[in-house]
Amino acid sequence: MVRFLLNNEPVELQVSNPNMTVLNYLREQQRKTGTKEGCAAGDCGACTVVVASPSDDGNSLTYTTINSCIALMSSLHGKQLITVEDLASLQAQHPVQTAMVNHNGSQCGFCTPGFVMSAFAFYHSDNAPERENVIDALSGNLCRCTGYRPIIDATIDACSNKTADKFDAQQATTLARLYALSREDVTEDSQLLMPDSREALQKAIAGNPDATLVAGSTDLALEITQKHQSFKTLISLSQMRCLQEVDVTESHIIIGAAVPLSRAMKTLVSHYPALKELFTRFASLPVRNQATMGGNVANASPIGDTPPLLLALNADIVADNGSDTRSIPANAFFTGYRQTALQSNEWISAIHIPLPQPAQYLAAYKISKRMEDDISAVLAVFNVGISDGVITSVASGFGGVAATPVECTALAASLVGKPWRDAQTLSEGKNLLTHAFNPIDDVRATAAYRKQVLGNLWHRFWLENQQDNLIPTRVVHHA
Image (cartoon, rainbow, N blue to C red; front, side, top):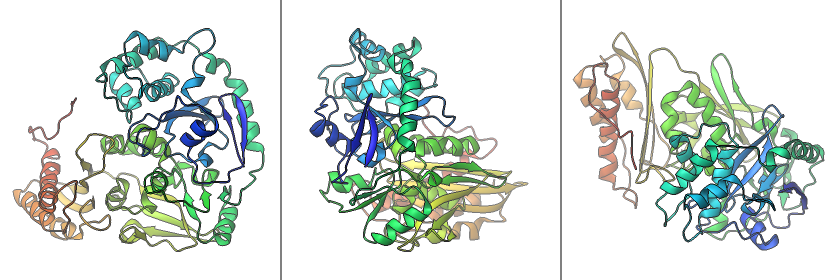
C-alpha cells in the first residue's frame, strides 16, 4: 500500500502493478495531463513533477524535482506529489507561471510544464537566483522553441522577487499530514515490497529470491519504459532509513546506499571540491534527485560515473545480508560486465570514502558529446600524492575503456618515487595510459579515440598541477 498526498488529497494505492510509473499514474488514473511524456527515459524533462518531504530538521518541507517517467510509485510513499495543475489558485497564477508568461518563455508549450515545475522547486529552495544556479535547477529540461534565454530570465525574475505562496501557507498542515502517513505501518502488496529494516529486507529477499531491488529506479525504469520488460515483484528500498544516512567520521565519508546523489554530492564536494564538475554533469538535477550512489555502483556499468571515482579514492563498499556485513574494496567489487562481488542474498548498505589527505591531488574528467545529461565516452579520475616534489602514491579509475570500471595499477608501479615536475613523468604516464586498455568502437567513440584521450587526460592533469602552469586546460564558460 503506497500512501502519499496528491497535492492536498491523501491517496492510498494498492499497487497491483509494481511497474507503474508516476507519469502513467497521473495521466491514466488521475487524468492530470499537464505532465507530458516526451522520451520516457528521463532525458527531456517534459514529465517533471515536484515531491515535497520533511527537511532534515523536520521543521520545513524540501521540494525536489523528479522525472515522473522513470519514477515508480513506491518512491512517493510518505511524500507530497505536486504537478503543474496544482500551482495556480483560483485568484491567480503562481509567480513562476506569471514570469514565464511575461518573459515569453513558452511557444509550442509542450516542455513548459516541466520548466515551470523546475522553476517552482527552485522558488522554494535557499539557492541564490544567480544564472549558474538557475541553469542547474532547469537542467534536464529540453526546449526546441525559445532558445532557453527567456526561460532562464523568467526563473531569475520570479525567484528574485519571492513572496509567500499557498504552499508556504499550508506548510504546517502538510508536514503534520506527512508525519501522520509515515507513522502508519507499511502494508505490503504481494508484487511490491517496501521493507523498513534490515530484518524486513532480509526476509523479503529470502521469500522472493527472484525479485529485483530498486532504489532510485533511474536505470531500472528504462527496462520498463524502453525495453517493455515487466517485473513480477519489486523490493523497494524507499523506506530503508538506515540506507539513507550520510555521516563523516575522523577518517571517512559514509554514504548510505539509498542516499540520492544530489544529497551525497553536497558532502563529497565540500571535502573534495574538484568533484563538483563531475557531479554536476551526472545526468541532470531531477535524475540526481532520484538516482543513488548505491544503485550506480550495483549497476556495475562500465560507463557509470561514480565507480571510477570510488576506485581512485580507494573506497570500500559495505555489503549486508541482514545478519552480517562485510567490506569489499572497490577494486575487488566489479568482477565482470555488469557483475559484482555481491552474493545473491546481499545488498549494498553504504560506501566508505576516505577523507582527503595533505598533498593529495585529485581530478575527475568526463568526456562526452554534451555537457550535461550524457553518458561518458571516457571518464578518468586521478588521485596522486606528492611530497617534496616526489610522487608518493597514485590511484586511478576509468570508465568507458573496458568491460568494467577499471584502475591502472601499472601507473602507480611506474611513477611512485619519481619527480612530479619531470617531463619523463608526463611522457611515461601518457604512454602507459595510451596502451593500458583495449576499448571498443561504439556510437560514442572509437577505440583509437579513447586511447588517445586517456593519454591526453594525463597530460592535462599533469599540467593543471604544475605550480607555474599558465596554459588554460578547460573551457570554463560555454553556451
